[in-house]
Length: 373
Ligand code: G3I
Image 1 (tube, helix red, strand yellow):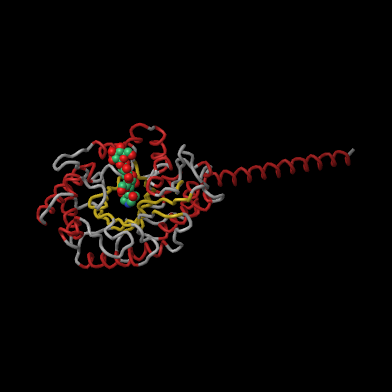
Image 2 (image 1 turned 120 degrees about the vertical axis):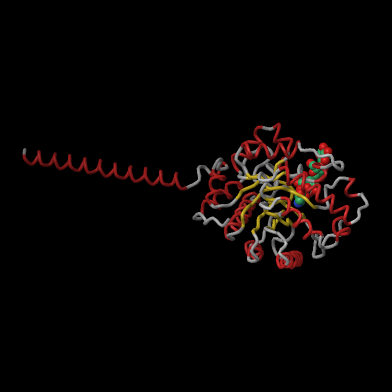
């Protein structure tokens, strides 16, 4: 009996022990799972909706997107993609000269007001794009015959109107867009250069600083992301401007990449400019793929998006990565580069592509970087 009793106690104890072990195991599994859920992005493969802004802010980096007015007004899904995934917006076109001042002294604020109002209602920052550029100028400006003083007056009026209207609301501006010829290294011989000479750049930056002393003033350029003669020429220009105390705060590396050509050493080229005391951004990121999209290309593209985010995170004064469009259905690529497609993190139906998950992962992998601004 005793034996039987003790054996049943033993088996009871063993049973309890097994129960306790199973319970502890469950608890461990639960805690590990809960821990993972808390530390890993939620369903990054689904696009990590809501994760990106939080992760970007934690890393003190702005994650921007270029927006167009029409879908911003008429397309609810378009608006959701912007508010759920980004922390700032850039107007893709509507703050450009031809839209803002289509006739001299006639300003159209409908587009810019829409973008800035949308951003403010949704807690997004606005990066201003763009003041002096050779494209998208109205005919009255491009075809006018100007003396240097007249053109300076035109420049001042336009800057005062645009920057003045959004002072304190648009906190950084591309003052000079694409100053070098497409393949560099010569300065672009456009209206501003021809009438005012090389110093139009210093004049414009100085004027912009007088109008809005708090704004961060940028030169925005393409084809400089992997170094080379154009980047060197920009470096020399910028060094000269800084030596002369011209108010310049940042360089935008546009980042219009062809799939397979995102430089491995992007961070080095960014850092070269932050070493001068400037901030930098990747201002117009897209990675275009030739049609038909080869198998595996979207996964490779995802790694390229991650590489860009990581490069920016590696450089303390890299403040922003902005993608150039909300979805492949709104991208400038098919119109400008026939035969190329699929350059952005969302497809035409707003379905997130691997690139979006890769951005989430890139931002989640690192410990938060300390604030630098
Ligand atoms: O203005 C007409 C409008 O009246 C018409 O209804 C509409 C119909 O398609 O076309 C409008 O013009 C288009 C304009 O964007 C505004 O949507 C042009 O056809 C189109 O070629 C133009 O392209 C823009 C391009 O700049 C112009 O140079 C792109 O959307 C815009 O993404 C692109 O952005 C530039 C950056 O500002 C600077 N860096 C390079 C980048 C890509 O070119």
